[in-house]
Length: 305
Image (cartoon, rainbow, N blue to C red; front, side, top):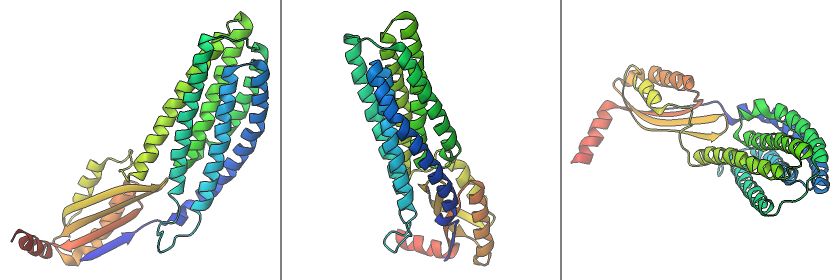
């Protein structure tokens, strides 16, 4: 039997992680600083929409801190007991961030329900000023994280928090304008409900994606049918079975499978072809075991007997 194990190591992800850490630290400073100002502004304006945005910004601070901690621990070297190291901590951080977003959306909806029953006075002008400043901060933070959010699920969790805040700031700005121009204070409550709904959608997507990784499901962007057909198209490879593809962490997709070969002398060529075809599907870590047809037939005959 022949076995091939070819991969791009986890160390290849370190340059990306290093750039992401720097961006996350800067966003953490911006978010923490403005969060205090927004809480004070929400208190004086008596605005639920602004308070909801401030509360969400508080979860941002915790989420980004969690992401930074996970990325720091993920750099620890692997050991015999933990052969992949701690890279999955980033996925766990993304899952926790999603759960916090769910709780946040529920809290906003609960507070909004109370204000629908008992409307309160809202300072529209103060709401506009604070929301505009918050929007500027969130646009800067989202710009810093955008490119890295496409490459790391953990950073995407922090990015989703920032996007939720940005949407919340826009909503608070609109609510402030309506309250200031018309005096209709329930606009503040309705906008807070819209913010809660948008946060809920983003949280559900993040939790679903993180859960798929933890369950070692095939990546959503990968067509398993096409991959299997491609591997079965390797010349000299008559059978492919026990195919598994999973994501260890963002940017690291692995494959393992067994194959039956007609000519043992063609093992190296077949394994090289398998590796190249896997790379075309974005899979850089490949473990593929080959068995000669004669051996497989003998084993199956023995099993049937």
